[in-house]
Length: 249
Image (cartoon, rainbow, N blue to C red; front, side, top):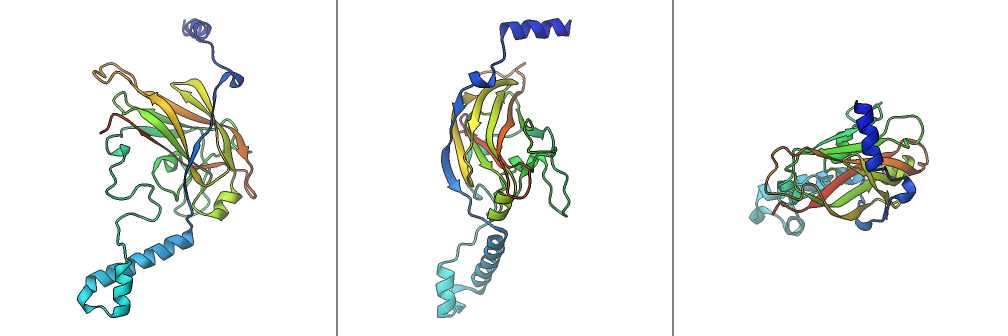
């Protein structure tokens, strides 16, 4: 019976082929110019500034006062996408989950490449697909509760952006196929860059905000269809796919 129902649905709502899908191009955002060396320097500077603050301005030498005046002690980590205290769209979002069709098994201590890395709001970690070849057909899937605020921007950090070396050595995505609730919706063309790539979209999610009773969760899936080949590895990486939207403030 389920088979005939599926056929009936496919007849009423035929799936679009790749050629039929609209192609979306991004606006370029923040360039991620970070590195492991930069992280060490950042931590060193933060510690030096904290020591000067603890010592007290009156007790500082003229040289120390000059350093103090340029200090910016912050709780924000070097790799954080959002600064501590920033009231982003995520202040009111949440409850969503992420999964992947595969992920690369780690050979290193304290480093993994699982799906959640693409949704931890960090420039340091990345999801890396785990199949032979360049990962064509592999995907990330985001699942949202019915009450979740609607999405109006999709922001993608393409490749392994934690350093120039890691970014070049690993493969990056050239094109993603976007599915909304399992339906192919658009092709997202990505530039081969460490910039954040921003796709502005019509609101995705439940438009009727008056009642959520009985409404199902909804999904976004991003499937790799083309890649930029890495200089050393065929493994394809995505550092982050995160969102902005409405229904929060």
